[in-house]
Length: 138
Image 1 (tube, rainbow, N blue to C red):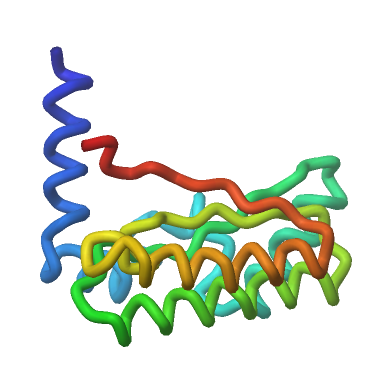
Image 2 (cartoon, rainbow, N blue to C red):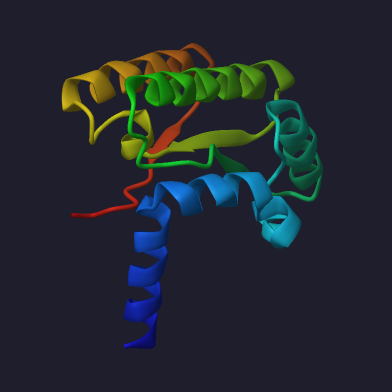
């Protein structure tokens, strides 16, 4: 019961624009740094390399979901493409996780699929894997 309530609270919070923006801005300062590889692609590559040296394979996820404009979705798509390129060029053992709502699913499903295709084409170019993180099963 407590787990279900917690899940619902966090899901609702993730859909709130103000809370989502605050988490992006202040999350690392309030403990998220334990699970966040960095606030830039470059810092994430350094952290992933360190984890690889310990025998760990990593998955990167660009934070932010439930975007409300095509511009935000395009920016997220470009960031994911750049992340895949950095993974490929650095040679780290890492893949990518994406959220469809971050790519514009709530705006236009066809637009979201165009963005996803760009990401998948990049992943294919670097022989990498993309996981779809279904944050809102409804």
